[in-house]
Length: 610
Image (cartoon, rainbow, N blue to C red; front, top):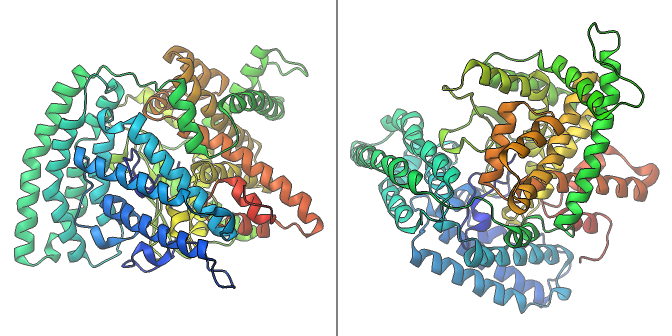
């Protein structure tokens, strides 16, 4: 999972936290206006291009002003001392901005734009319509408390995690934000309607509520010595006030919001279909995605069964593996083979260290096989910050496109202290050593870390900010498949089995996504889908059920994006013929930023931009 930049949806209201792009696009003090549009063409720009580039600059500048936290994440540090305004007045200002920008964009003749600007204009138009849809119909400000807890944690973490400026400067910005955080809590209590807040959202927000203090204690207080006395006194006063306020906020969450949260976490068919269109920016409908996914489940399980037959051959007590198995025989054989892989797993406290070791192996493999040009900026495996926990096991947190050569964080969630040994064992069977290797391929090498770094070499900040979730997640799933095919981990059949299980997981994600929000699937049936059809351990499945409730449409991006990447690969092989080269293909497909795959194909193969 890669984290989605706040700035991509700040013109109305954004649910997500984290970062979506990486790379040295500009220096850290730059205004986004400096790199708003796509690369200049050799000839003089048309009047339409001039008009669009000016609009793109104003949209970027306005978006950063409306979401200072998103601006920090993007690498625009003009507003590092400010926080987003989620009050009614602030939301109205953001919505008016989106509507105004959309109205101006619609007046530009896109047929007169350069090919690159045609893509950027399409992305911007989709985002602005998405912003208006969120403001009019989703209205997350009224029912999603995790949007507020995510904002407070991200506001401080993004200042302290990377050395984009001297420590005293970042501490002064953090001080100003800490002073303003109580206003976020006030806006949260004023905006949320408990009748609309789903219980799972209230519970998750309550668990995240101490996240800001965790960042303060681990990342801010240890660096106070770098401040002059007057600045240190101001910071200490701000922290002391927050230590009084946060327990009151936590008590409100636990004693008032959670008991009274009566909302429905299912958004329903109409909203899901409309949101899916914006989130994927794909020609595939919900019904077509479901049909393809269900067919692919059958195909993947057949491949897994073929591997299981080989690895179980001659093993004492192995289940039967006939040529034409029944459903029960197929299930038993695949599960027995997966149990063999699960036996090789880390200890409860060693997950991060194993992730580091497996990432090093993947890096060596990609370099030795020259599969893609590698980034010149580092990646670090870290413990997931507390404010971000509760949604996914891991994520890739890359620096914004305006920050230069700073580290990417591959964040891994620790096993919760309150889990029993049985729960921890269930988790570690799912995230066994081979599975952690696959996690590193997806999140970092050559998955999100590498692709997003490439993406941000393209000189359009609009495109970097508006990166397509399906392209980015699809690339990571494609990378898993490609690495296995190229022989990663010495063509170990159990690793290939685990890789297919991960692909099965991505495919079932798409089914679960719409099953939850459109079909009303029960927890019992969802767990059956995840544990039996997709072979997930109980802890993984329980976490995925929670994640499906806390999100909508995002779980579809993996499967849809992977299908689009597989299609692009087939097209390239057909069009390039004997000139096809895997490194050339990878460097090319990642060179256009991260727009939806259909735009990448049109740019790669010089087809009209639709």
